[in-house]
Length: 332
Ligand SMILES: Nc1ncnc2c1ncn2[C@@H]1O[C@H](COP(=O)(O)OP(=O)(O)OP(=O)(O)O)[C@@H](O)[C@H]1O
Ligand SMILES: [Mg+2]
Figure (cartoon, rainbow, N blue to C red):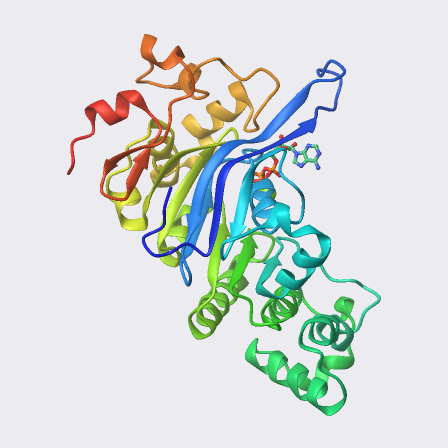
């Protein structure tokens, strides 16, 4: 799957399995958290990764950053194969790839002052020290809307939104080319979410960073992303430009996701809830032989049991992994 421009980050056949835990799992069985995906992010692009809880979004993000090795497949960052780089090479690339986590409480070391949190990457990657370091810390705090006088404070002295600003300052401190934002606002109060999103998007524009924006919230995704990748049980099922996905969703799972957002009373439980209840969001122990979504799919036919459907281009730049949808979607 190619991004329009030369990709900055690209993965091929990316797969990650974990040893399965819990009573239901016989010894030695594995969960395919990511089941073989191809994806490319162009420089400066924001690609959203959406899908229900447990479908493999965070694992994909960690693999793209080389925070853990894939079970198979490869990740290339600016043409460098992360697996081939080794620890040292990977450490050198760290400066160009950063992550903002969902939880602003867990992601900051409570024993580190803001100054120390921000100083660490600046010392390691930019070799700053003394007054140069102090100046950069001040600039960073101001660029995320915090007072530079607060550099000596500790995480517990800040609100959730302020902590997320600190985490964002840490991520952008080294002016990375690529940031994985893993549900960056979902742990925050609704009233704060907009501010943090606007900050993130403004910084992304200013620093021309590419971003993998992981989210459950399709309304937010529509506002911030250039393209959207939809994931279901470890696989990509649809990928297209944002407006295309929202205007012409092709995969039955994407349609279900969009319907559940548009439904006026989502708490009544709709298709999304029943999908989760019946199949589990995660790439479970018993992957069906065919399309993982077939058990719940209104379009399912005998075709669907014949191996996992590959992503196919059904319209320029619009890819869908559904034989039935590909057959019925005209190029509107
Ligand atoms: N370190 C791990 N060890 C074992 N299993 C794991 C590990 N990390 C993830 N998994 C499993 O892999 C699957 C995908 O998890 P992942 O966290 O990537 O999903 P997600 O889409 O980010 O979910 P959420 O929306 O809830 O954050 C889940 O079944 C999860 O339990
Ligand atoms: Mg996650």
